[in-house]
Image 1 (tube, helix red, strand yellow):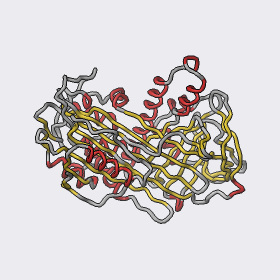
Image 2 (image 1 turned 90 degrees about the horizontal axis):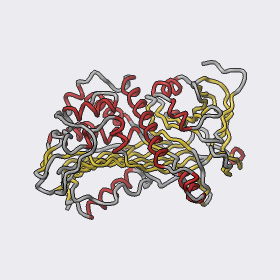
Image 3 (image 1 turned 30 degrees about the vertical axis):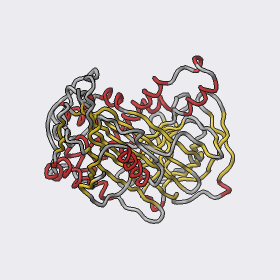
Length: 465
């Protein structure tokens, strides 16, 4: 039976769940190094030199998002067999799965709650991947989440929660829970970690992503001792919605040359984006609070090659310094979903110790009589739907922890998104990328352009021998 430990009002924007567990099975160790100790205290975070609005926080989040996108694309390319090795029908399905969408905000929110209990080399590696110290980034994200606002035409909501097992084998550090309550408004629940808990977590995710992420977990592992969950929901109307005459039949050309029929939305915008290898535009949502940024790679360059060449600094420069000029644009209607297990990606990024049961140091979270706790999995799910009225997007991230059981130019620009492109949903006040993704393929299903399920999540699991 669920026992509520902590309750605070929260805004909803993403979902992250972290689970710590015990298996009692054979020792599991990954090819990596890891370990050490420190708890992020509320006082430490508030005394950080980083304040909300400072450039360093936004720059770190943008750089993290671009690097993570690159590693996800690399993972996708490595897991996709060559066209010659599979039937054409299977190839058609697998190409569609390469449409990718992640929420750096959701993923970081889940991981930063976890990092509050990390120490030593484990903490150092996590901070290296984040691009900022945990106290500084915690303070920045805390203030950012508290600053979120909405009205009847747009909202970005974020919620955080922690579930921990009732099993007496696991003892949690109260300071860890208090820190996540105070900084991130995390609700804390003690639960039996059975099928009823699985249902509770998934229902919480569904509710806090406005139904866009129906579930984040398929099962509760017997070795799990804690889940840290963050949920994000974005829903906004365009500042200028598309009229019927602006929506016409169009064509989208995949990188393999196949042409697909789409519904294309045409408009005239005024913010032109120009980078070293790509051009694009900003299209604002209501009140100019958020914007959809689309970037088309230069001819002869694939979207994956463009993403690989991009840096956080370059993306931020493009987003913060648009050229004011007339831009003729064409944007396809589409829906996209994506899900990925990210543990290997974070290990490749340098966060190895957190996933190694022998080296992980999460002593600031708690301890288990069955062995050391470590992250086993990081699960992430996202969803986006773009149409003539606006955009809906959701993301969920779950961490499962186990123990071992300027002036207008005279000539207008043209950016038609009729081939693979990169896009970002950005907060215009901070220029933080809430979502970042690519579109490579469109499959017409029931009049919609479906790239996956309506959800986004990340799960991290900790375990011991």
